[in-house]
Amino acid sequence: MAFTGAGISTESGIPDFRSPGGIWSRHRQIMYDEFMRDPAARLEYWRQRCDPEMDMSAAQPNTAHLVLARWEEAGRLQAVVTQNIDGLHQLAGSRRVVELHGTARKVKCQDCAALYEARPYIEEFRTTGRVPSCPACIKGRLKLATISFGQALDADVLQQALDWTHRADLMLAIGSSLVVEPAASLPRLVSERGARLIIINREPTRLDSAADLVLHGSCGELLAEIARCLDA
Ligand code: NAD
Ligand code: ZN
Image 1 (cartoon, rainbow, N blue to C red):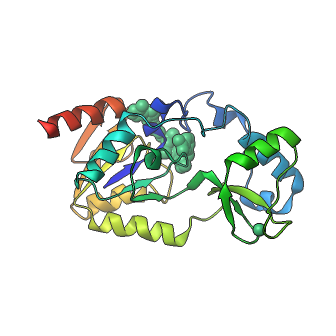
Image 2: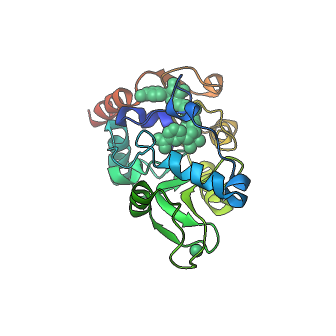
């Protein structure tokens, strides 16, 4: 299985969380309970998410996403568990994808749980400057279908990620600083079980000492190289 973080998508032009001066560090974090209770926080949330700099909807998968999709098709890779919200694994062709932090390609009504494509709502906000509301229950509060700061992970989604983790004989942890919990505990579980852990990241991570192999470099270049070796 693969476990991926923001680093697998930087080569698609989406900045990761911890890059200095990154867009995420310039925005105030809106906590989930604030979003739920305060109309001004909802306006600020939509303003941030519709900022063209924050918008990931035009990004395309890169070599790393494509290699993983190809391995799944070839029966080499069982599943991708990702912390990313950009939807690029599915765009690359991966089918078994567990999105721990949800997806920015959809919006979800926080009152009736209805799901919609995000695109038209983002365009609506850009044109009108008004926070959109749910067409099904009329006044429902719409938010991207992602896990917000202060919001718990979806229990079923987390369980699916744990199931893959318990079954895996090898995990490739790709492009993650492995600090965000509870997601970062998945690679730890793999190494504690005695299954293989390979970490692919530009810089050292907390779990490097627990890994069987650590490859420092670009996700795209390293995965392309591994794919070439396997093909040979
Ligand atoms: P992170 O930002 O904490 O760590 C990313 C790691 O990837 C860093 O250690 C960095 O050195 C490395 N990296 C960056 N580009 C790389 C490349 N091209 N090749 C190899 N390594 C590279 O990311 P995280 O651990 O995923 O945690 C960030 C949180 O923020 C996640 O929970 C995620 O939901 C969210 N986030 C998502 C996206 C996205 O969906 N693309 C982007 C930013 C943040
Ligand atoms: Zn609704």
